[in-house]
Amino acid sequence: MQPISVIFPYLPIPAHRRRDQARTRLAEIFATIIKSRKASGQSEEDMLQCFIDSKYKNGRQTTESEVTGLLIAALFAGQHTSSITSTWTGAYLLKFQQYFAEAVEEQKEVMKRHGDKIDHDILAEMDVLYRCIKEALRLHPPLIMLLRQSHSDFSVTTREGKEFDIPKGHIVATSPAFANRLPHIFKNPDSYDPDRFAAGREEDKVAGAFSYISFGGGRHGCLGEPFAYLQIKAIWTHLLRNFEFELVSPFPENDWNAMVVGIKGEVMVSYKRRKLVVDN
Image (tube, rainbow, N blue to C red; front, top):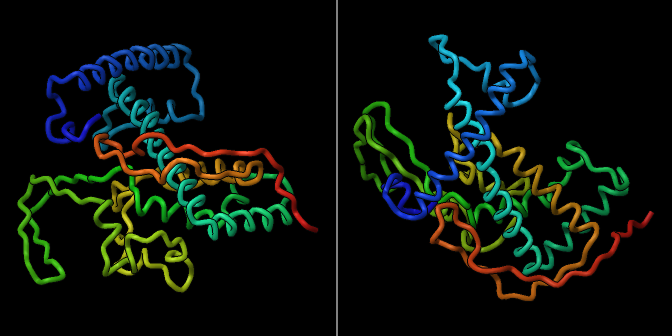
């Protein structure tokens, strides 16, 4: 996907042809799985079964094509975004050694309480790592444009008092890349400062629920937000406990040519395996 895909999703360009061919092949694979599940007569407690059993308000069952689309969306929704955010998290930790040291110290404190065990509740205790991830995501949201269709006429008044009328049926767009750096919400918005999310500051709540929109918001906010933090925490928990790193390439830049904005080029590190030692 490329930025032009937002405006012209069916433009006959090579990227769209490859997308459509891949979608067709995935649909064939998932269709076989769905038919096999239905033919077996068995009901499993998994996401596939949830999609198969889902119904609309009018009672209509989901079609095979719709289930396929949902599975494809679930498969790819967090693949690139999580890997990109994990990379940015590491790049900033290695650039700002004080936060790297804080993250390592947090791991030591957690290990004093729980040993080498890692589970959902233990990962939830890692507030320093959480704030480092969240700040990397504030500065570099992989999805830089959120689109919504207006279901009714309404107006928006800016902080400067200017009013905009939004007609029903129009598409409204907002950019997390822009909104996450608004100076009246985030102090020194271009600076990496994970402590802005700490208790007592909580800059992500200054303007209400939509101050921080890396995961969107409202009815169609990203349902995978808790899992994304859990996943990236698990990755960096393992890395912090088992390796020493040094950033050897220049600090990365955004690749603005992609639909999901990733990192331009490669992020190179030198590493040495070591086991994090906890003092009793």
